[in-house]
Image (cartoon, rainbow, N blue to C red; front, side, top):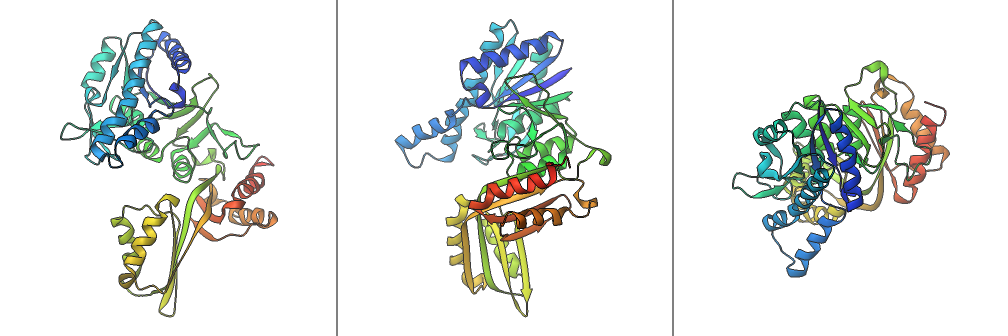
Length: 402
């Protein structure tokens, strides 16, 4: 059995954690499993490297920044290989070039284009465990590029695809995917099986266990994923294609406090009116979250959310292009939280929306914006009400075993 296993930054944060992970993999290998391991940088290494660059210049440049921070993963890979060898397990550390990971040339947020698995297969045939530096690839110029937030998750899934692995395990500091963040909701439950679509929604809406890009790839190529603890052998959460009969109508509730709401009042209701707004955001490289549009008697309002860190850039762009967009007034709220209820069974279960808003009404929480799809309901509330809203909704659907 070929297993690709990924360890995050917390899981390799110190020597003790690395040795513990190596011991766990030695047990797997003794059961005649072949292993490919993907590692993130240790703990706060990436932030520390960025701070070192900032001590020298406030404009390090994207190419040199990628060259610098990619060394964090290479350190982890070498240390893990050393730990595995100390456990009696033959191992070799590999960087992106050695692993054949080819990526686009967008420094800081590249995409994996292809992987040549020849070296990886060679090491596996020799009986080695290949320890791969995650989060990075090589572009057409031979430069190292990083592949954005959650990049090590994406690296692991991509390797599982090209190697036709039997399983991809994401080892982290939690023991699975929960119905809500257990740090916020005390009675959150671990989900034992969840569909790709539900996991994708949870990941994109604030759940930080898996990055959405890795889930997209796993769904596309039907790679079975397990999210499990790095520090224990307890059963994790299996992410796969789930038959309809197995699905709960609500799988989880997420909260994202890194949200700002923007409303353009009095936008002319004419062809291209909405396009002018959304094309501007695309040119600025801004991802938009919840979007609503109303139009009455020639004018209307457009509301949308962005990451709070993007707010200043967005406001500046909108003010600069007011004459093109033709809006009467701009309003924004930087104290907003996004609450999302996700479940593949929601589309065939009446009353879910009613239950969500009943829970918020009972908790005396006002709603600022609403967006729905077949498997999710997303609402915006005041940031101060975020945790109360998550708990109220979670209690509504899970307290009685729903």
